[in-house]
Length: 163
Image (tube, rainbow, N blue to C red; front, side):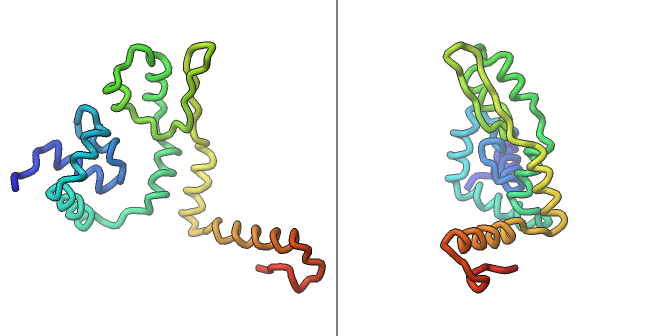
């Protein structure tokens, strides 16, 4: 087993923190990051290094919270670069762009390019809810059950779902 290169070690460290293989490979400096990420994650020595990095680091917030942080505070710079120069960018250039906060890209028949972003305010609300220890999912489930019971013809109070 040969030792990892600096780029491979950097990839393992980044991947252990973000769980985003393509972005980790791009940030580590690999050309064609999607392909490089796939190949790296197939190697046992890389997976061992990722496990070592995970166990050596302090516990990280959940992956959903990390995603909401990226959506809330991520830079739109790469999306703007894509918008301004999309016709001149190569496939490799596009793979290096951080487009995590982009929800949709369209090439309308009229020409040009349309880019839509995820809602930063919703992401911030989710972060605040996670920080406060709230769980919207439980409340949403109860609301759905209550509404479903009402729609099934729950004429009496006995069929209503209560908090």
